[in-house]
Length: 172
Image (cartoon, rainbow, N blue to C red):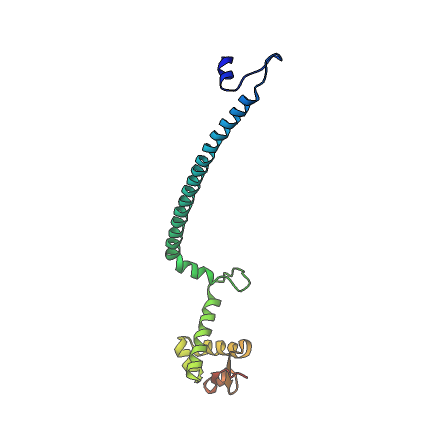
C-alpha cells in the first residue's frame, strides 16, 4: 500500500530514515493544480446556471404576483375608492355615517352650478341639488361665510331667501 503512494509521488513518512522526494511532492501539487483548474470552471458554470434558474423563477413569481395584484385591483377598485374617501389630508380615518361626504358633494355640485350659471338664486340651486330651499340656503351660506368659495348679493337672511343672488367668487 505504501509502495502505491510512493510510486505516485506521495508517501507517509513515519520514520526519519526515509527520504522525502520533493520532486514527487511537486508532481502531486501539479496534478492537484490541474484538477482544480478543471473543477473551478465547471463549478462556475454550474453556479451561474443555478443563479440564472433562480432569476427565472423569481421573474415568473413576480409576474404571477403582478397579475394577482391587477386582478385584485380591478376587483376591488370601487371599494378602494370608497375607502380612500374616508381618509383626510392628514391620513386620519374618518367614519361619520356619510353626512359630511354628502355635504361636500353637494358643495361641489353647487359650486359648479353657480360657476356655470354665473348668477343664480337659491331656488334654482335647490332644484339643481334636489334639496329644499332651506337646505340649499344653509349650504350656500356656509360656502359664502366659511369656505369663501362663492359671492352673494342681497341681505343674507332666511327671510330674504327669494331675493338673494349667488355668484361666482371673483379673483382679486
